[in-house]
Structure formats: C-alpha cells, structure tokens
Image (cartoon, rainbow, N blue to C red; front, side, top):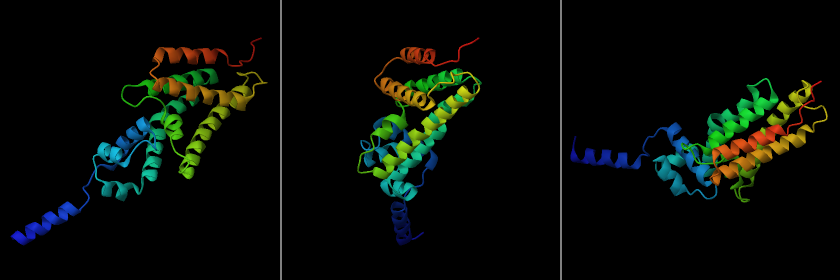
Length: 211
C-alpha cells in the first residue's frame, strides 16, 4: 500500500463512528438514567458510561430523549416489569400483592443496580420543558395503576376482597406504597424494614370475612 493510500485509510477510520454493542450501550445508559434521572444526567455522563462517542450515540438513538425512552422500555421489560408480573402469578390477590411489593424492594435495594425505581424517581426528574416526555412517564405510572386496579377487581369478583372495596382508591394506595418504598430504598432504608412495611400494608387489606 502506498503512503498516500495508507493516509487515506487512516483518515477514513478516524472519521467513521466506531462500532459498538447497541444493547450493552443501552443497558449502561439505563443505569445512568436510573441513578441520576433525566434532567440531571448529562450527555457527557451518557457518552462516558456507554463507551461511545457523541456521533455514534446520535446516529444510534437520535437524541437524549429517544435514548431515555428506550432505556425506560428496557427497564420496564427487564427490571420493573418482572416485579409487576408477580401480581399475576398467584391465585390469591393478597399473595400477589405481597410478592409484587417484595420483588420491587429486592430490585430497589439490590447491589447490582441504582437504588429506587426508575419509573417513579427517574421519571419525576423530567423537567417541564420536556412536556411530552413527562406525559409519557405519567402514562406509564397510570398503566401500572390500572394493572393493579384490574387485579384488585378480580379479588372482589372472586370473593377474596370485601365487596364494598373501593378498587380505585386501593390501587391509588398501592401506588403510594410503591413510591414510598422507592424513596426509602434510595434513602438507604434496610430491606427488612421495607418488607415489614409491606406486611403491615397487606394486613390492612379489606378481606372478605370468612363465614
């Protein structure tokens, strides 16, 4: 190869965005957003964590907002969604709620990830200037509430919960517990204490009186 050809090859190599594992990079971005939230997380934070340059990031994801959307989707599918699915794996709504909340606490307090919930805590960090993104995060939280409410309604229909149960109010209380567990986990409250709070909540469920 001539000296001129060698120089041209080096120039093209330098100008070409380097290839990377998109899935691994997205997971690392998810961890950063989870830990810092959307607004607090800078592009420099993301580029550094993902191990890529800015041109590669924009070429692959388009924008910080789109990257966040994909990161939230990954969290929902691979992390938070696993806890929510516990609600459907038990015949008893009471056991399903307990399993869901305990799985959430295990996720929120696990050493392998940032503490707390990305949907509740990270989503609240999206500023008013990103109204569309804020609306999307709100919609995700409402979707969780609707899933919980539907499961509670099943509990009323099958006679496990008292027929007078206000399903929507109880679902709202469950969401409040979700948020509280997430905040306390981020504050460093021990897992055992959060499990105890869950048990206390479960003990107050309006179960149908046995005859």
